[in-house]
Length: 178
Ligand code: PRP
Ligand code: MN
Ligand code: MG
Image (cartoon, rainbow, N blue to C red; front, side, top):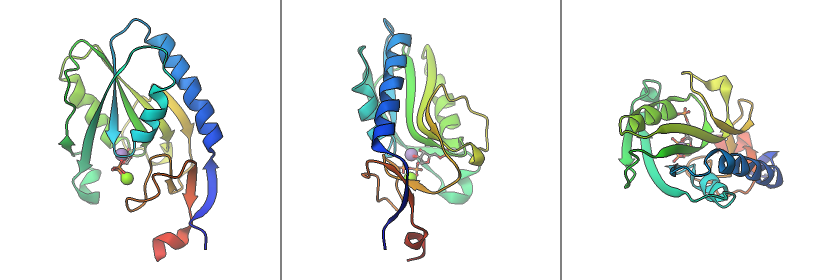
């Protein structure tokens, strides 16, 4: 039995989209003090690809968050496991995520970072699953809108695995059952 049911977004499509987004951000942030904050763990691959498509200087950092179990995820309470190390005061911030699902993680993070005096905080997400949204959130830069399927690869995991798949894939249901 194969682990992957279907490739939803191929590595080539991802690559092309990342280039497009990199060009757009390079133009819009020209001459600005930009820091990109990757949300661990899922955001690390997209961040790594994206910054190599930028034609402008950029600072990077990472933040690691965890929701208080699955039931309280809906409460929107997020625990910071590892904060960013650098100051974002008077800087332009872009939070880099692999996927936006309910939107709770991003809503919390954006509000938290805004308390630190940045010039602005924007959001980029490789994938958007709007069917699962619980809170309104503006996605400033978006890769792909996807249906309500369980996807892995390009940073996204199932039970901590499959993040390394180069394509965004729909997992075979047999994997959940076994
Ligand atoms: C996933 C994903 C986003 C978040 C999106 O992370 O990478 O960070 O959930 O969900 P939301 O919009 O409903 O808040 P996860 O908590 O699985 O951690 P991981 O990135 O380490 O896999
Ligand atoms: Mn994540
Ligand atoms: Mg995960």
